[in-house]
Length: 235
Image (cartoon, rainbow, N blue to C red; front, side, top):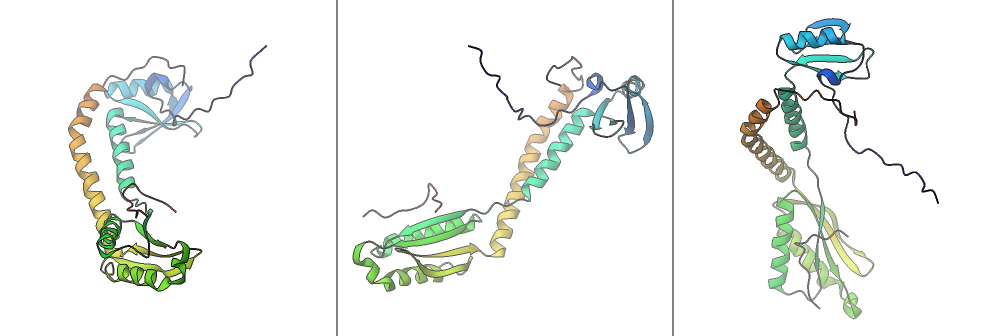
């Protein structure tokens, strides 16, 4: 029995063609400083790149003809990676963490919950504090309201209340979010960490640039959200 043909999706990113892997007849050539050399046969563009001890890199394959730059390919990859890192460090992903408690949670455990909530907030995450009722506990919601109000009072320095304590079925919950100054501090810390990592990787990148001076020109055929730190009460 013949087997059906399987379709596999290529998940790799777009491949950058360099030097002899550029197989079109002619290209539009630009120098690294932006100087336009115009349209010319690809072989002539390659010779110009080789005469400068640089590489011919296809930067816009969709153009007609494709646009190529004469530049240091190793340095080009390094700069691309640096730009991607700079863009990534500006992104802040806010998660919703959850702290669970019960009306019978004692003061010691409530302080543990508070420390966990503050830790989440200081990391730039929102926090949902949920008090779950069991059995006849739901007839006394004032206990849960007192607990949640107490948490708000002890987080007011770093958090804004997005949702006041309210009933949701057999639970009462509130949602708090980091204050703008907390989020700014988190972003600054991430930026410093990214810059430090970039600096530490610079020497390694320079070594890689030296190793990549010779470009391989061989043909390539393949042109309620819980966190592990959430504290939960035992019954």
